[in-house]
Image (cartoon, rainbow, N blue to C red; front, side, top):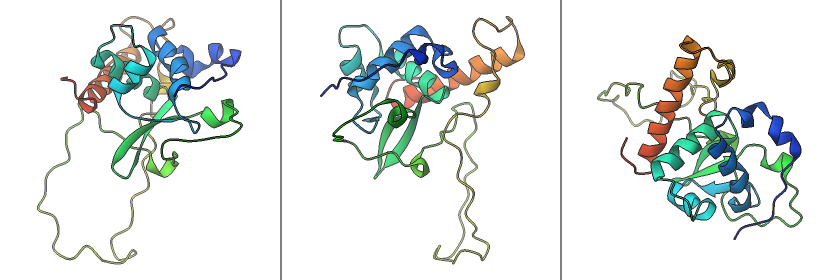
Length: 194
């Protein structure tokens, strides 16, 4: 069920928010009404489209691309819980006051954020794996790798704004390449062809 939420005027000058396309900004504002009292929602483009844009002609590929923009700007993060994938609005608790919270979905935990590999990035090489039980204790050659930061914050703050970028600028081209790869990953995740 949709909830009444508060939109602060400061959102209009947020660097993360203004870097998004107008449709992504509209999606973000409307998502607030349909995400639960913890700022969480199942990562399902079709469901979100039916909630937020029921009378509009957005395709699943367009929805996936809009979500990729929001994720790319750090406004939304994807996380997993018991094999299911959810979205979390990163500043939800800071900006929304919920008197009697009644969350419907598992809470976001920073350790459960799902880093995603870009479709342009090659798959890791396949190997035969090692022999053994896999039960070697920590500290004997099986150190845990540090957790990856939530996808995809690396590099986005260095990209020039839409209005400030110079056509042909290498950083702008890299930004467009990354955004296209993110959109393809979201389309793939949501079941749409790339």
